[in-house]
Length: 289
Image (cartoon, rainbow, N blue to C red; front, side):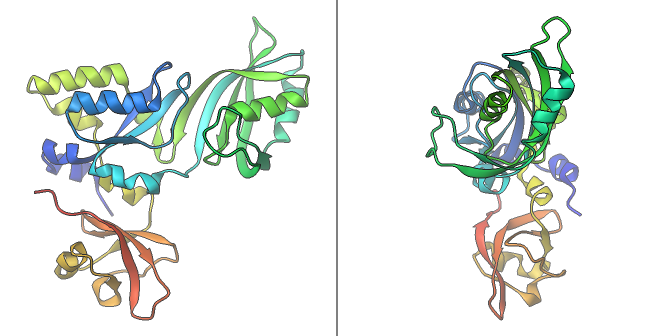
């Protein structure tokens, strides 16, 4: 079992800044890339990268990787996401009837990206796991609060628009992401509080910054873990493929695995169908010097 808290407590702050993720609560206004820049400048590091872009007016969970943790991005994106928001219907409807219509959009749906999207506008299948209308505004009966858990790549604004087609029109007023992969709003930090924490760090107090840094070893919560014997760690760090004699446990039947020796992260490997080689390195993490 990988102990993220133990890793965090034992690493120097310099090591954490080299390989960590900060779960930012993005405010309405700035772009996701703008948040990256703010963090990079505040911490005086060379690279940052967010997992899952939020539109400028959308708030909520925006994990931002620091330095070498940016290499982990492919393993976090593509995971399910949860949102809450406010929609407005163009014709009066009861909460019960609106929910019945929303139920038609759960499961596999066909969705074409909106015109303003950067991706090619071709119809694609997406999964909506949950689409609940939770509350009707007592002061404005046309406004409803909703919650949606969806597959990555699902456009919530388009989901609301398509819902509206069946009920005489609807559009989204507000949207907040409450969860992205393993990151949720409960363990996020407001961008303004983040800047205060950095100021405290620059004044000699690293405690609060340490608290919000999530070690990159959190990849162990996303990919299956393979434990390897200590005597083979250096070979793997130098690019050796994974063979049976190196490992302590069985290789899971998944495409990618996170390789560890105790709490020491070695890298992400891709499993193979080869007779003697269990997996080949896809990303090898070199020890921080």
